[in-house]
Image 1 (cartoon, each protein chain N blue to C red):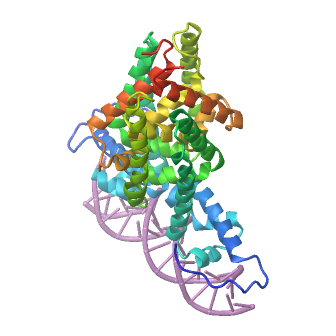
Image 2: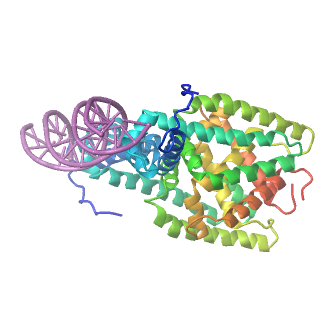
Length: 215
Length: 215
DNA sequence: GTCTATATGCTGATAGAC
DNA sequence: GTCTATCAGCATATAGAC
């Protein structure tokens, strides 16, 4: 989105720039997730990325810029994934697929989910525009599909927006609140089997709660 | 839990100590919720409470102490409320009651919920012991009740722990992620009517998803 | 492009007068 | 008990040698 880079034909010696940037971004996601925006220090991010602190500022100028980049990466990932939800016609299949997709993202990118959650909890100062435009439009489009299903008698009447909120909350909680879930399950960390049980429990309850004919 | 105070018979002139402490605690909850632990400054908390910063340190000694107090208050409030869930025999009534109770807490004390959420997201460094003991015990006890309901054929078989996680996630999201929910609903803030719709949507889906006989 | 050394500003905490 | 003035430490960001 920002400046157009040079033709990139230098290619002389050391580890290239994109690699270093990716390394810093990954470290930043981890540190922001663990300590929050203010609690994260550029020193710790640089250390984790294995670069001197001055390099981090050379590549990203400010801590705030770096944070924006991390947020943008996460939002893009989620949005790309959400596109998959569009194409499915059958409500049972669509919802089941979406729940499992979101759970997989919670499993595979919990750090990104935590950075996002942190931003929202603190009032979304950097994402409020995105929430009110892109996300709202996507949600409204999905809500219309759900309303069609209801009108066709394929699922019971429920508020479509709150149904979507429900799916977000129940799936993301396995990333954001993973420590708490693990604790009440009596484990140190969540494993693949726990995510499978979660998927089955969630789809079972939500689908049985929605489908008109039952079973 | 800490030290026993003096007999409190001074009662001479200015605004008394408990009042000031409560003022600081309330301000702290708000600032910690909005900015996180590190992002919150004692200066801002003191300003919001209307006391000089030195007074804050006189009453609570350190920022960390103050944070612990805020966390303890929240946990106590939630735990006291959770006791209500115990006594109800009928699964439909018990779950419906618990969902509405949790939603009411999200409505009435969103700031406390946010401080708690923040703590968990960052790995629960100050609450991990509580999660693994008190909360786990409470959850296991509830899970046993749910398993009885299943054994008696009163609700369909689901994983009791994941069901409880589901209820926590879906109700607390209206506090922690209130900004996001409001945004996709096209409003600036959530109102009583939104919480009522949430309660109906959640109980409808969860109860229909659980009850054996349907309808 | 990379890195060491440093400047500048802010925050938690306290000293000490009232 | 209350508050002003201040200190010590730390974090962001940059200057400037390599």
